[in-house]
Length: 208
Image 1 (tube, helix red, strand yellow):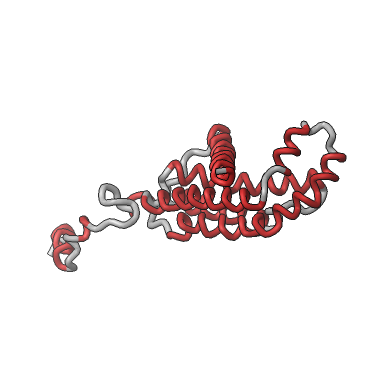
Image 2 (spheres, one colour; image 1 turned 180 degrees about the horizontal axis):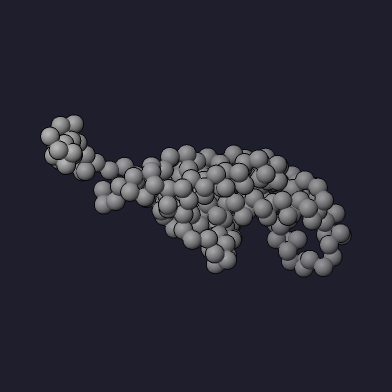
């Protein structure tokens, strides 16, 4: 039997003819294998898990840190507008907790979108980038105040490593969107917008 004849019989012999209709998180229209392999849920749903662990640090230490450190920081950085300090001090523990809950919904939606699309979702990737940049901002804040700031402990051991790992997996699978200065700006904008939305919603819910 010729090689070409053997190849034509392989799908039928091994019962593979029906596999073309199967699909995973990438959807039926495009198989995961066609773009570099299956993306583990640890990459997509793992974003929410990593965020939850990181934010638990901010919840545990954030409000107390503000009460204890903002007065000294106000004296140390007089160039910062007073309205900024008032805004920081004006966030109550209840508002902060509600804002974290709202943010949890946003991150969960991004992670679910990433899972459904096999990591291709622009919403998921922007949130992932924003998460990593958020970690870098924590490190910058700690450098400026020359001490601990809530969130800085988990940033170098969780936030940044997870973001780099997840981006690496997406890159190897051929699904990472092109990284440009614009994409970095979008990541920062996504994180900032999510923060503003979460605190705006929390403030309205708390004051009602």
